Image 1 (cartoon, each protein chain N blue to C red):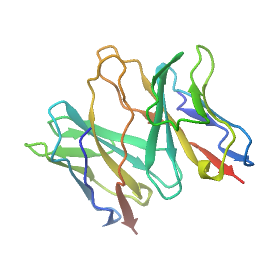
Image 2: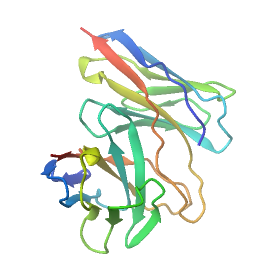
Image 3: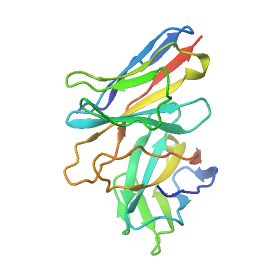
Length: 117
Length: 115
């Protein structure tokens, strides 16, 4: 059973370009979470999605950042008009569908390292 | 979610048990204690979680005090590959209708296993 997959693993963008980060959850998982880790800092929650729904985006910057998890295909974190401060590691995690209101542990992918030049 | 306090760093000799403490004095009755670790440049890895009783799996043991205000993660025979930042997180697993479920990571404990 493959784990959470993220691509690309490394992404370099010039200031003003767009960055698209992809995340394929583990098989059977229908919940996806995105986290950001700035250099020398801890992980910060950004957004929580289920298929075709954004459940909680309280950690997302208000501008330039968006996320989706379509019915088919991977979840996408999109950063428009990137700036140097967006340089970070972006991690995706997935968890299975909860049937009882109890959420399960999250399994993390290897991350995408975004460098903005 | 309740706040946790962990020492910033610890050393342990290879082959010995590593005991990582965590204080969570404001934990509420519905909150579980979770442990994750992050090996340098990798994604966080789930280790173990528990509510009241001590728990053990193939990676580690979790000891939770009777008043639930603190816990200890035990790696029974530490190896060099266990060098990582270890995060203790308290989390309310019961939420209604898709409320916020993101994990709140603190600064963790940087565990260094010495050869």
